[in-house]
Amino acid sequence: MTSSGVLRGMPGESINDLYSSEIPLKVIKKAGYKVVFNNFDIPGVTQRFSNNKVMIQIFTIGLSKKDSTEGNN
Image 1 (tube, rainbow, N blue to C red):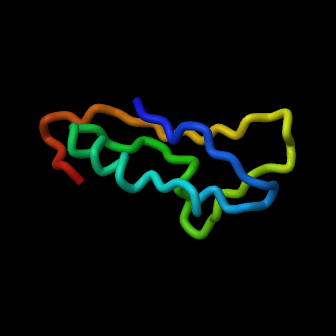
Image 2: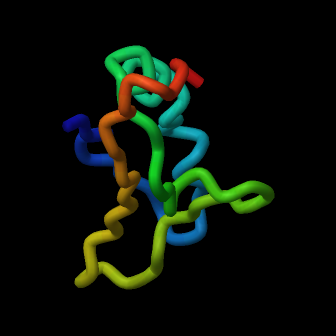
């Protein structure tokens, strides 16, 4: 399990400018896992800080252990 840690920004500012899942996902994939779902890295979408100070924004990437017949892609 990995986390970006706390990221802070003003409402509307890009979260993608502060954090990328690219390197953690490479490490996770090399460890034998595959991405099942990813609600942070959506093609064409820039994740932005919300203007709701009460709600914490959480983005989740679901993983599954690859079976022995799958490659390391």
